[in-house]
Length: 586
Image 1 (cartoon, one colour):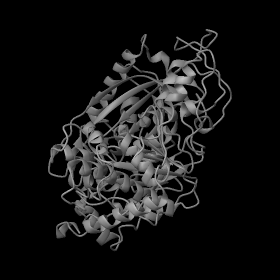
Image 2 (image 1 turned 60 degrees about the horizontal axis):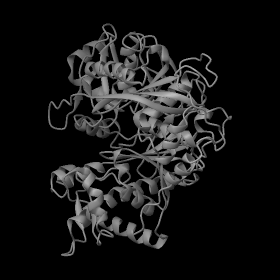
Image 3 (image 1 turned 45 degrees about the vertical axis):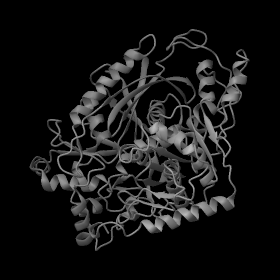
Image 4 (image 1 turned 180 degrees about the vertical axis):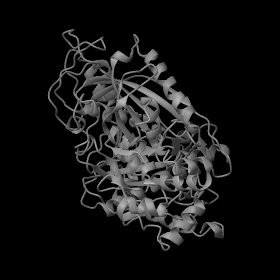
C-alpha cells in the first residue's frame, strides 16, 4: 500500500526558501470550511514582536484571547494571540488533572470547587508561560468550553455546591430512565426527540437533575425554598468566575444537551421539565455562545470579560471552522462526529442525535448539527496494550499494524459495552471474525484500527441519509489518535473522502477562543468562516509556515468496489456481535 498522501510540508519548504515573499496558503480542504491560516492566498506577512503593537509600532487594544477547556479528566487554559481577522496563534497553556470520584460501580463524580480552583491556577500559570510575560491588561476576553451534560447543583444564596457534580458518563440514572420511559412516556424513549432532539438516556443532564432531587436531601430542600440552581459545568464556572449569584446562565449548546431545551426556540420547554420533575426556576438563563456574560472577579485575569461559551464537541467543530455541510470527528477514548446542518433542525431517522452547533451572538442565526458517538476508539488500543499485552505503548500500534499489508481477512468489532450510534445495540459484545492460523498480532492490531474507521463510516453513512441534501466532501479530524497516519489513511480509504488534520489539534480550545473573539467584537462570525477576507497583515511568518507544514491531507487510495466489499464484511461481522450480552442488557 502506498504511503499516506500528506500535503503541506513541501509547500512550506518552498515558501521558506523565499522569506521575503508572502506565504502561499494551500487551497481550503473543503468548500464549507477554511482553517485559520488558509483564509487568503494573497495576504502579506509582517513580523511583530510586541503583544500590543501593530506593524508601525503604535499602541493597540489587548490582542490576546484566552480559552478555558474544562474536560472530563483535566482543565486546560490556552492563550492565543490575534494575528489576523479571525486568525489565532497559540502562545502558552497550562493543564491540571482533577480527581475522579467513584462512589459506586458505574457512578462518577467531580468536585466542582476543585475544578474551579484548578481553573484559576491554570489561568495564572499560562500567563506566566507567555514569552516575555503577560498580564490581564494584555487579554481582551476569555471563552469557556466544557465537558457536556455533567451536572452541578448549588445554592443560589450561598453559591456553594450542594453535591458533587454528576458526570456525563455516570450510570446511576438507569432505573430512572427506564421508569420514565415506561410510566411517563408510555414506553417511547424517543418521546422528547421532536422538541429536544434527544432520546431518554442516562447521558443527558435532565435525568441527573431529577435523580439529585429524588435522592439528595440538600438538593430537595433547596428546591423547596427556591434556593436551587442547576447547571452544567459552563454554568458553574461562569457563576464562580464572575463571583455573582446573579450570573446563572448557560449557552445554547450546553442547554441542548439537557433534554429540556426546545431546539427551535432555544428556550426551556416547560412541558418536558414538568414530565421530568425539574423546576424551571432552578434552571439557568439560556444565552448565545458569543456575548458578554460578565467579568472575572478574582485571580490573575480579574476584570477580563467572559464572552464565549460552547460545549466541547461544538467548540471542536467551530475550531475546525466547519460551516454548513462540514463534518468533524474527534478521536479520543471514543469518537464524536458532528455534521453542521446549517439553519435546519434535521430530525434523525437513522440513529443520530439532533443538537445545536452554535449561535454566535444574541441576534445571530443559530446553526444546528447531527451528532453520532462511538464508544470504543482509543480505548480499543488501550485494550490491546493492557489486557492482551500485544503492545507496550499506544504509539506501538501503528508500526505493528503497518508491518502487514492488510488485516488478513480479520474483522474486529470492539463492542465491549454494546454499540453506540447509529446502531444503539446494548446487547452487542466484542467479536473477532475471520481468524485463521495465518493471523498474527499485527493483523489484530490492523483490524482494530480498521474497526475505529468502520464505526466512523457507520456514523457518516447515517448522516448522509439524514442530510442527503448536504454536499459532504471532507472529514475534519482531531484528537490524540489522529497522530496515527496509517489510521487516518485507512479512514480516507473507507470513507471515500478527503481527511483533513490541522496542525493544531487542540481544536476544542480554539473554538472557545473564536467564540470569545466574536463575542468581544474582535472579529465577526463571517471572518471565522470566509475564504477571502480583507488583506490585513498576518503577524508571524515563521508560525504561519510551521502551521502550513504540519497540516496533513489524506486522500482515498482505493476504488469504490474494494470499499464496498470491505464495508460489507464489516457489516457482516457486526451482525455476529449482536445478542451476545447477558439477558438484562438486551
